[in-house]
Figure 1 (tube, rainbow, N blue to C red):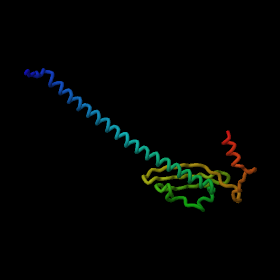
Figure 2: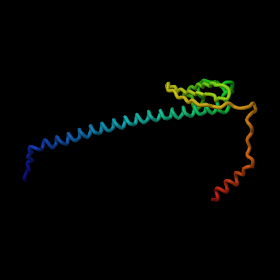
Figure 3: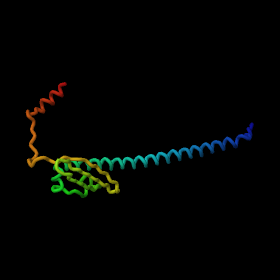
Figure 4: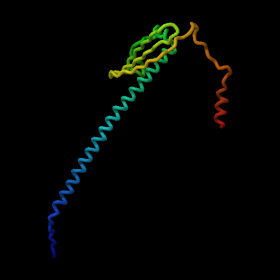
Length: 158
């Protein structure tokens, strides 16, 4: 029976050291990559929430200015509150409207300000012409009746 003896060369220990060094470097690179991914994920969630707040604020500003346009800038303060807390889906916002009358023949200057619970404020300023006359808005009907079913069938047959 022959026994083989393993003779360790001088490079043997260095090679096993290289394997350990490779694992340590790979671990460091993995740690850096994971921390970067977590950082980017956190930043993207923050930016997404900020975008949601901006969209909601823009929607509330649009609703407020549409109401002023609908009611007329002269009548709006008598019909609605010019400041307060938003209703669904704008519960996280407070609003304030400033309507100034510049005089006869000039448009009203309307400033709408919306403030989020975080303290972030958004505003929009515009000019809105006053309603003319005392008559209520006329009922608008088409000159000819619209046959919606025929229009649908015509579009469907194409």
